[in-house]
Length: 74
Image (cartoon, rainbow, N blue to C red):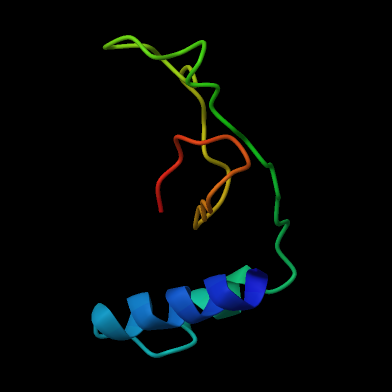
């Protein structure tokens, strides 16, 4: 998964007109978190329901994949 994010970071750098390794150099030896989440739509199905409250993203990139619980679209 980290290798896929490195490719995304390289594509982003090229898209911004930067050197390919601009972001991946900063990602090396950095802490990386893997936190699987899911949304129970049997419980949270009304308009304006909040799945996750206010939080801080600690990382440069966030990758979300389909979860075992339906409702997370990728």
